[in-house]
Amino acid sequence: MATLTYLTTTHFDFGSIQNLNTELGKAGITRVFIATDAGVRAAGLVDKVTDALEDDLPISIFDETPGNPTEAAVTKAFEQYTADGCDGVLAIGGGSAMDLGKAVALLAGSGGPLAQYDPLAGGGKLVKAVAPLLAVPTTAGTGSEVSVGFVIIMDDGRKLTFASPLFIPKAAICDPELTLGLPGTMTAATGMDAITHCIEAFLTPGINPPADGVALDGLWRGWRHLPEAVKNGQDREARWQMMMCSTEGALSFIKGLGAVHAMSHAAGRIARLNLHHGTLNAVFLPAVLRFNAPECGDKYERLRLAIGLAPGADLADAVAAMNADIGLPAGLGAMGVEEDDIPELIAYAQKDLSARTNPRQASADDFEMMIRQSL
Image (cartoon, rainbow, N blue to C red; front, side, top):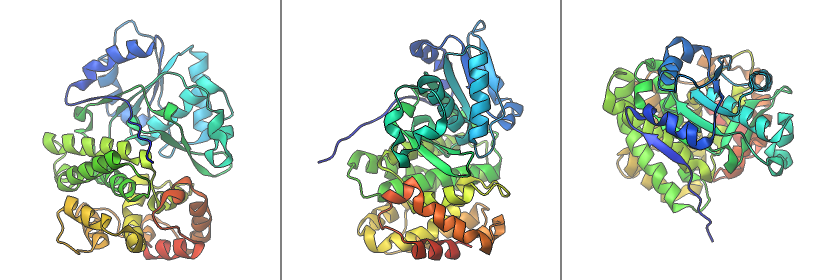
């Protein structure tokens, strides 16, 4: 038996930012806390969003979100939220800003500390409420604007995934206009993040045909339009399609993710490297596709059809070729990961929530094999 749940309100198209005031009113937000980062603010994107707001709406802006959001940053942001008397969160940016915004909304609604909500320790049942939350993505990758989860590096060094239907923003404003200035390297990395979401969600063993359909549609769009979006960031059609791929990837991973994300989370917590999550996904994906092949049956044929490959073509090779075409690193070694990092990567990947929904369960030896193949 399958129980199907689908998901939130999404305003999608060029100019959709004009719907923001209406959604803030519906959410009952009268003093808004904006979660963003310094790069998004410096690019003028926060101003573009706030220019669309009512002139008399009180605003508190937190722009200190790290590239990989941390518990310490969440704590600092929540202190500002409380001190400024805010009653709702507006996240503006990529996955990091949206994840931090979700964490602040959780603390505002259910109290701290954040660690008590660790889903691996049964903390999900402690989530009682979150503050009203809206999201405006400025990249096309994470899809956090419509997803049930967020990821934070904790004070103890763990990179945890928190998940609850309550973490889905009350509304998402997906305006591709906000992505037109995204540099090619970031377009490539975030785009492969979205493509990985579509592939991993489709391959998870859970039964949710609507989510499978959304994943395949997102993959179809992303695979065809990512190279052009990287080559010409002003291509409005490519930007529209990549943002839709991103949103659909997150709508589909309500089913779960897999070993790619388990290893990416493990590598993303290495403080000295501060690696980009989407780039890690791209690098790990070929090895995981090879590992999962014996368990995936005709699902690989459906992926080939969505991508436009010939029957029986090697999916892993196609992903590696895409990575090379759009200028992403060929392996972890080029990103600074070293041999000494491998034991820690294995240990954290095995414990990660995403490992539970991989179509083929991976042992420590399996993770070591995939990590070494990705070096």
